[in-house]
Image (cartoon, rainbow, N blue to C red; front, side):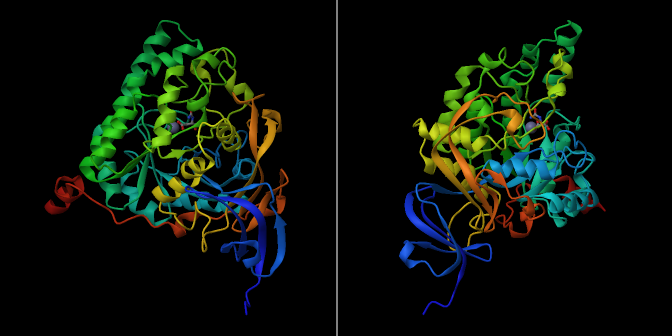
Length: 475
Ligand code: NCD
Ligand code: ZN
């Protein structure tokens, strides 16, 4: 006799994994998946939910968001940001450290963990800031539960100083020994700074000047240099927001050499181009910039062949006033995305650009694997957390910035038609968004996922040349 009673059985959906779509029911108990299979094989349940006609996806894991909390509550906070995520079928986010104060010490990290845990509807990981001033804090940040580190090779919103190559090498040496992954904003700061100064001095302040200050070589150089330093030290790195076709060569070559390097792109680099600049001036400004259309196809191909591992959003909310200033050098760069990534990408599934299995691979399975969360996260398997996006692939919808959960209310996606929409989102078995309505009582339900993270054993290389071993040997 089966004595177990499930808390919830989701019945008769189409369950999606990276390999297949199967007609199945899912039983959930204590926040985890108890069983998946034929509806007739499900245990008795306290509650059932009919998902006939709907697809059941592992919730998306967005490893690149800026929820601005603490520091910029007028742009976003943990409550509004995670509400937006819940509406977007996203069940776990990793928040970037360019908040105020930046997440560079164990004390600041602990405070941010508390803020997030009090407000979040969904699960989260917190990045620690890696730079010249925080190298010494790495062990304490790891003990404090960072999901990984963020290193700004180039300056962007928040004016976090970018470490020079010497400091970057030392950062990689120290983090390599911890096994954690380092996410990189891979843009060369020297080139950008010089070009921006020259353009400003020449009085050029239109939006194309932003693009001119950051030509593709800015990214190509940074990715190549980071790959060399990662190869030397054994550090694990993740190249954020790949925007150009040119970055793919150093990325692929490093992968072929066995460097533990992974890549990410975002919907705006796949679906927007310089042709959109005059339509949404300033609003579209983001670092790295949205580029010429010819970059889109190679980035799509890289995503489909696995060279780029992850689709994330760089959710970077700012207000309409901050986005529409006349002088491009004063416009805040970035725009929200955590709520619109899934509908935009499902629209591409409907258009035949990729399969829904491909989508699950890049939105959930791969991020869970590269961040050491698989199979607790990123999968619908017995024992996995019941983090689920229930989507209607045939539902059409028009994105309206005014109707989004994010506080930002301005993006280049306003008015865009999509087909394929998350209708319900569950985090550890609990509905956080149901029938396109936020379950407000789940505020504070989100938990930090660092407690379940298991990165593979560190693979340190050339340790004998590291600053730490040299200074240790002499003291
Ligand atoms: C981000 C932000 O606003 O915090 N802006 C952006 O243009 N992408 C910072 C970043 O990720 O570079
Ligand atoms: Zn960035």
